[in-house]
Length: 457
Image 1 (cartoon, rainbow, N blue to C red):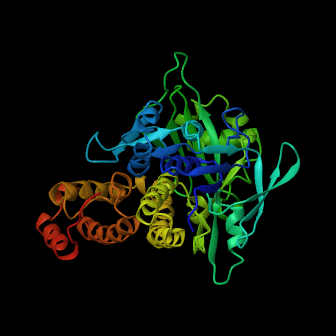
Image 2: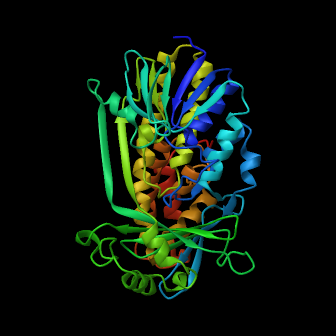
Image 3: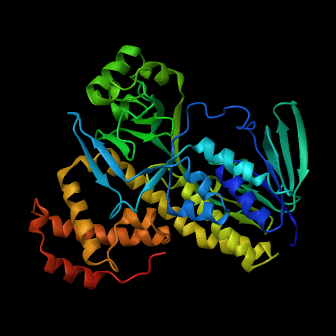
């Protein structure tokens, strides 16, 4: 089907970016969004985990010409700052040196800038407060409800790309087709956004160039820096007493219990949080879920992209980066198969599905690492061994985190190589306590026999 008009449902990060990609190719793009225009009214509502922008997302932003602008509002984070219960801290670097870092970026500010960039193209138009209520896959008729005017609108679309999030109405319609595979898994953990304000001079109260983590075994808190001198904190905690005991959202039901919980578990942080209890009870408790489904497209007429196709938990900082990478590859396929949307969408879903599943698994694994393992001596020793192996065998051994975050290797490759490398680290760290005790001859023998060379993207 050849068309010059594309309809996007969802004006979040992925939808807004995709509209720019399509406009640069000369398409007319209509973008429908259920929320009001966030450039006019704040729509975050205390449920926005700061973004960790890394290589895959940066690549996409460079392609549409926005990276230099976003870099102005991004704060580099060179590693994890681990906060122990006794108040001591330790920086665990992400990369081999200061050239490898992730960026703390405001989700709302990035979204606003993407929408504003999209509107510089004559062919792009946004429609806000338009909630998709139904989509007919056969006819292409989309039903919207205007939440401002309190009326229904019908739109006929030839090509629809749904970037409408983890609870996608378009995906709900696709689930009615035969042999549509779908799984949705909620974590028994929620998250609460909290706040550390700047000091009296408008400066950050903690190290600015780090992602701060308070790992406490079955739960944790993180903090990412903002350009105004504040930190956005996120507490990840079990919902109910069955899993978390007294350390659960159900149990933290009074100011006294919240203050006691933070004094006992985050004593260095609570001193920096003057509005802790107000934030805790005012901000909603967010949910964490993983969505996997297939197929992502129907008859060359409609496709899912980003969270609508593969929602993941935020513990690898790759949700937005993965969605942006969807846009990158879809853009390449549109050029490759100009006008043949059936082929474009089929190749897109076959290419991206294995990698979406891989990053979903990696993100769930990383939750355990962040909340528990990072504070353990054995883990810290393995990270030192991992870093040394990367220096000695850079063509064969690359840390899993680096493969995911600082390169564009397929997520599926990072997952599989990561499993092999973890077994190597288990062997080399067994029975020792210091890096000097590693048998490097044995390390070389294992790596040469079990890992192939690869090209980093």
